Image (tube, rainbow over all chains, first blue to last red; front, side):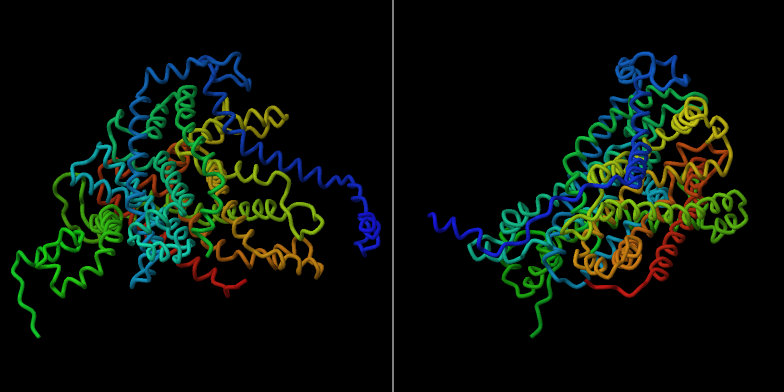
Length: 294
Length: 334
């Protein structure tokens, strides 16, 4: 014991660590930090403005003081009672939920197949997915209107579910293909040797491993459908069948804007999004990389 | 040998067997050799057909219909007469259309440059902007994940909500912007931002577009920058490269592919700019082509509106191809 401890200092050791150099005060650091905070403030101020205005009493809307004299929580109750907000919320929930489910059902098999099989036209399929991603909904607006006019489906919730699903399909297929492609196929082969069939191997081995990708695709689709505006504006003409985003827009009258109600409704509309975003915030980066760069 | 010709019923059974599990397929079909080919494609049929059908109905079909109806005088009723290129010749001499197109093209040129430049700058600060630390060639600024979330957040908001928020910020009497300007003693700089002046409205639109989309590119570019191996930075550091040189000689060339993709996406977003301008900007101040299309749509000139839509689609295609071509560089593998 003692000899062991005695020999220890003898072993050639690295040169003794110097104490960390004292940080020199650099004015540049301060300036950079100040700029960064200012920038963050520019990015955050609009949200603050939204929340403050949502709580502003109606008679103080045109005041220049930044904070209202007191917070009017009744705005939320008033807007709920007096506008079609409840209906709009119901429509949006149905649309976002339905579209997400549909996207998952359709994109998962397609992504699985594209990731696992080398079939003819695989590249063409992925290219098709990418190119359609580039169509602007506004340019397709009249074509879609015509389509649903023919099917007599204007003002039906299904219309929005189907269009939202169609527009989000590309992104989901793209991300899921990348995600599933990164899971080694050998795992599935092993499972199949052990007696699972192809379908079982897919559902019991690959899908659980691809779950983060699936969750990302699901939440992304949900958020995008929740936020969709153009289709809701053109394909739904009755106020109580319009989604939330269009309903909010209805607060802007020709001459006056009821800012407090408008923003109270907006706050209601973005709370679910914030909650969902908190879940995938971590995955967003990996998801985007998987889908884009290589 | 020749195969026995199939009766219509059998043919139908064959076709149906593509979509039916083998268990439910009649033996007569299942034991036929031709069934093997079908068996091979069942997987494809289920897994790829569905998305393709979906796509055909909701993306490809409206697209083709849009092209067809741009050659008609359809007004929303039952009849649509073929009128040849009438809509397009009318567009050619439509003063208001050209005005809107100039605005849209301005946005198409400026918005991607501004947004991508900001996005690259922020992303570089986040991944490589920090002070040099021991054992690390590069490091991000303090609190980089916080900044990432702050920048990205507008991306998850509805563009409709973004537009109303900024309308309030820009409003002349009680808006935040004028309030801040007045607060720091710059009363002279206060403006009626969205009051009708074209340049101010264009600037406001650009600000909102950049504000709402920059986060996406920050995340995209910082992911691309994160994929660059650290050794390359170390080598550059050893060779005495400063931060700016490192950026222009190392980072930018290595993420160029991503930048090009981002450029195309942002260009298309800027060419659209529909919700932002429709909600935020008063009609008399500024009008972009998609809003003009929407107005024609509301007026019931649906054939004419589709013609505008086709022009927009062609424009975005041309833009994408152009960026692909111009931005082509030798791909660097690392």
